[in-house]
Image 1: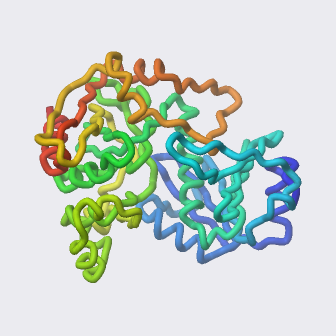
Image 2 (image 1 turned 60 degrees about the vertical axis):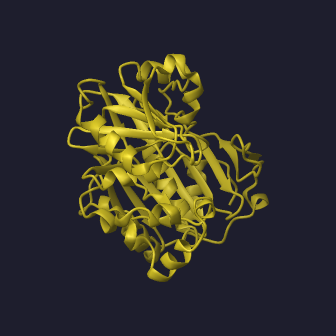
Length: 365
């Protein structure tokens, strides 16, 4: 099945294959149809995206084919793949890609999953059931691409909202933005996003900042330390696991790579996950354990360029701009977008409960 073009690949992949059905997802008015030859995969995806399923057969903005197959060997695809350089601080190459006349193909080296997209073609091909988390990410990446093509910038951030006000959380690796967001969730807010936010100016934005933030339909991936220190997250692990992790030294607990999906409806109740909200402020985590008392200061990003990498995020291989789009992801573009948005730095010592109270005060101000 050579990769001569995205369209030709899809046609060849569908030849003789029976589609089991479709799943329709509504991401705040952006409708995605997922078609698959695996009924089990559709059920798994439907359960994961339970907050965003829509009935009927609406006209979809995007159609995605998730096709179950053995992982294709690169040589069989007849294309020369280019390894993607690891992100700063990383060493392992995880992805490789090839540009096509009408799109791009990205191959995951560890799982062999192949993702082909361009124009009206979006295909996840390979052992999808075994790697449904990568299919989830691909579905969400189509929404991210659409949002970025409509004048948004991508933030490495989490977000929550109450009414018509919302706060975004960002921070350097391991600072705990998702953990803080879930502590704020206990104070009667709605969840907007865990790890990615798309931010733009818009008429539906906060009157003070003019900004609106769009989330991604992905459940928080959290470590055992986050679970143990937030009573709302009790459904995430069983009692035996809770006892085992509770017996571990605190410094070891917070460095574990073990992760859980925290479903918002199970932990906080139904109707608490929405994908858009006015953005009132940006909170940057720059604290450390054992750093003393929590300090909250408003900062001027134009004078603190050291904080920009905490939230600026490259769209990566799964973003391919539309033909009429000229995206600008420069520092200047981020500073211009945030020029009327209050930005706060949390420094000193890590204190999630007190920080959550401070963030609620910022929302209510």
